[in-house]
Amino acid sequence: MNETPASTVQTPIARARSNRHWAYALLALVVLLFGGGALAAWLWGGTTPGGQLGYPLADKQSFEQVERGRYLTLLADCAACHTAPGGQPYAGGLAIETPFGKLVAPNITPDRDTGIGAWTDDEFIAAMHEGRGRGGIRLFPAMPYPAYTKMTRDDVLAIRAYLATVNPVHNAVVANQLPFPLNIRTNLLVWNFLNFTPERFVPNPQKSAEWNRGAYIVEGAAHCGTCHTPKTLLGGDKTSTPLAGASLQGWFAPNITADPRKGIGNWSRDDLVAYLKTGSNDWTLASGPMADAVFHSTSKFTDADIAAIASYLKDNGSGEAAAAPAAISADDKAMRAGLAIYKDSCAACHKESGLGEANMFPRLAGSALAQSDDPTTLIRVVLQGSRAVSTAAKPTAPAMPAFDWRLDDAQAAALLTYIRNSWGNRAAPVSAGTVASGRSALARSP
Image (cartoon, rainbow, N blue to C red; front, side):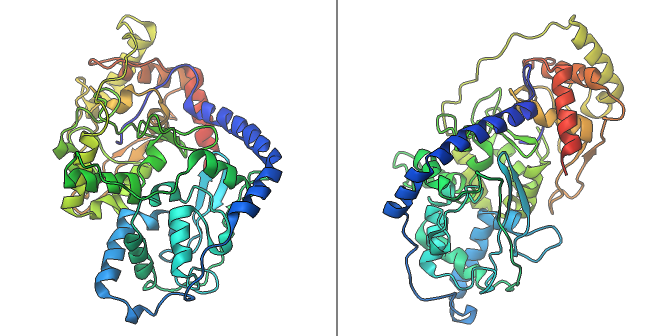
């Protein structure tokens, strides 16, 4: 879940930009359906149900419900989006870069004017279960209601009860900053029709209670698929390949299926538990967006819930390895160049064997991320460096230095090709053009 992936000729970052142009074209077509969308809004849009106005007073709520809601906000990782760096908890303001433009996370404190303090229970439920805000306004799916819809009503109301107790902050946020025509919320009627089914989680009677708890967390509250499931050009989940990895804000959220080559099939349950609880294991370290998820969320889960997640992920899907490309010969020119660079720049930490150092330097031999189809994270880490998460259990937070100043595009490509095809690894080579596109994307990123 932390190292780095692999690709073919076109960089995923370049492909993402290309996909963005396609997405604009497709969504422009959707806008042509605006009339149909408007009709649908008139027929089915409606408004959210009414009810008693505003939050109940915090001192009138059950302590048990508030405490359960506090824990559920950790499972749902609400703070990750709704708390801006240096900002007040849950007051919004964090910019979220999507393939379609920028959205800004709203204020969800109990402030009645700029937060959700004046919302009714049913309005809050509608936001979480149906993607409808106050007055029936359609929410963009950067708010992961396609996952939250699986949460029980009681759990959603517990989150609301907890949010009623946080400090109300007056912070007006303009959430919709997408360009025209993508900012037209009526388009979401079409998007929801194609990509969203409001439904609660249904336990699998053939599985254990622990497995079902893990499924509820992964598919619902923790919304793992929001990052780890491949997306269509319209940004919907490719439901045929859940949790198989996806590009995300200049990173690649890796495959977390039971695939032993590209996923976590070779990880033990203990490996998964250690990663989610501490941010590291014998295979890898959490960095990038996953470092934030571990720091703010998974490291604070109960041991029982982490065990349930591990149970679900280890017993979800076929567990068959994806077909591997032919290994690149060690005599290949790029492989020879990559070997020399690796010995000079990488072997001191990652070892000539590629086995790394457990809990300090990620293992590259047998690494699923090193062998995946998308090398975005690999390119980013080599060029820009990275720092692992610091947790209470593992506070060291090892770092990797940047090599953008030292390696040109061809050298970085040779190095990555070598890593992806040594020690039994097999993956497509990385081209200099792919690295150049990644370097350019990083230069433009904030």
